Length: 449
Ligand code: ADP
Image 1: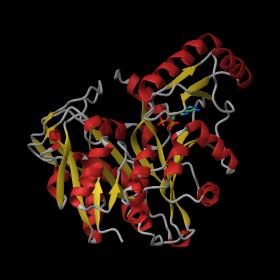
Image 2: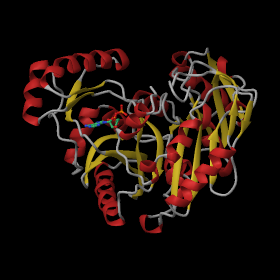
Image 3: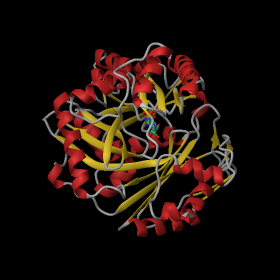
Image 4: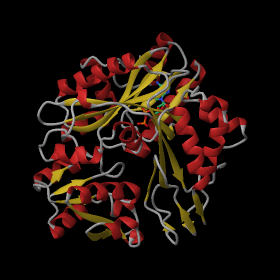
């Protein structure tokens, strides 16, 4: 049984895992760079180890430093959080070779889903509907053109190793294709060290709807409903909600069954998210994330299930604490990602937080690792907190969000909080009438970046 978990991460997600550990009576170990000596995860964990200088490559991404920290502290398991090494199959392999439990899926599944071309082929094999597109990698600009003509424009050139919305280029017409192809390839090479690209039909008004799954080693594969993550800027999620207002329970059950059957088919282990675009009543697979997602709290709020606890149970070889039939979705939840950024230009705004007053009260959860006096280091991402609200229905949830935003005070750095006040004023948002392009149009209309 796991008795001490080292958390190979920082920020709010490190706190999230420490909280689960403490509630389960498991010891926690924080690791940190020299820039994070005063970070909250370091204060709250039972032990902490400095693993290197500020640069992530030399600290949070340094596998030798993390293995050494496990050995020094006697940690018998590692939780990777999201980002950093969470989808690094080699890391999972190395931990296993050191008899340290990786709290996550099997390394082979991480590897498979990390290659989006292979992931799509696997999805087809497992009976999951996918976005129409190329049959695997597209190697030349001529091939890309021929295929796109057959498929019809617009098309999207996507990097096989892509992530975080990078390495993706749209071509609206033949004239734009050669450039989209070359730029996507060179961006992919620079960002991921792999220039393999593939082509998909560019869907013009889909929603991004993803299905949360959890699978144990006793053959139980369940889904925990969906999250609607259509509100995006530059292909990055800004606000997520569950359930999606465009699915009824029959549609939810149908896609849930397709996904859980597929997870059983591949003997998936752990939690994961199968991401789809949803247009005109049809689901189209885009990718699978083999880790806990930033937006997992909205699912926790409507199901009452602690996903990190389930991850630890699965890693321990235990059964999930619930079955598909036990699950009921209750009410509505919304998460706002609060970044230390200018709310108009979205430029990062590192600095010292002077005031920090998180909102509270019934149905309000603030997942954050900041405090008054905390200096946000410029070396990592700009997420400083997630405000999650739950209500009996969407209307109730919106009023709760309005109230929580009113209470929330963060001063000293600029944050994206005002954006959510503006969203609440929007009639389309109030009616949940949006697709993946809606937010960018909204920002543009308002003269923002
Ligand atoms: P990443 O791994 O970089 O996040 P994804 O494949 O998950 O890339 O796509 C991220 C976002 O990009 C989607 O949520 C959606 O907004 C947009 N996108 C991806 N594929 C398509 C497509 N075929 N048509 C339209 N938009 C797409």
